[in-house]
Image: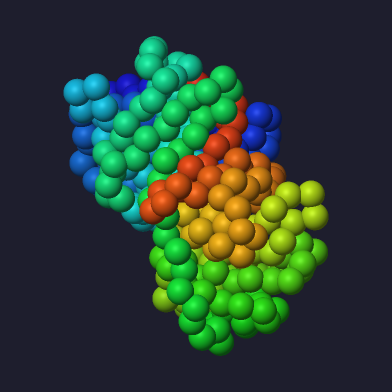
Length: 260
């Protein structure tokens, strides 16, 4: 069986920047074991699988080790493939996912995710978090992920996590964030428990980052950078109980997978 396959760099206009995601458009669903095997073999932070559903699409995301409930960069990548490679002619794609309805709109070269907001509540700082970061944040909160807030961009850039320690956290991942030097805020995202030590450019973490920084800075429109080695840029907006996360994407490769 031949499956179309694309590798897309998301939240960047450069193929070697942002976050690479695999995208597999399917006519119908394969069994879960096959989806997981494909994602493991691709060995990217996420592989997105897309199946038509009327004029909409069903969408699922897999890391090399597990299925996740929400992934921003792979959603952006899937929409980019549908818009530029698979002949979708509208300006908005609607997806159905484990996190409910999602959409991606196109305006010029910028694709904008419409995702649920996930505000984080203040919480105690777990020992595994402080040990895993070898640093003490000024504030800790939690939604799906822990949110560790630091005072300066340089603090976030300097982090050298102990990923074994971070695997002990009761969460999918850990967001480290601080005010930005040439942007509203910066972040890094670590998810070793999901098989991704550091994610280069993360959409889902901004479901928590955007409401936090919107409240702290007193504005709803924000520009963010993810300061991983590959880097990423996000155009952010808080819209009630939704967040809008805009970014560019770039094609790295297209081909076929041969699976039995």
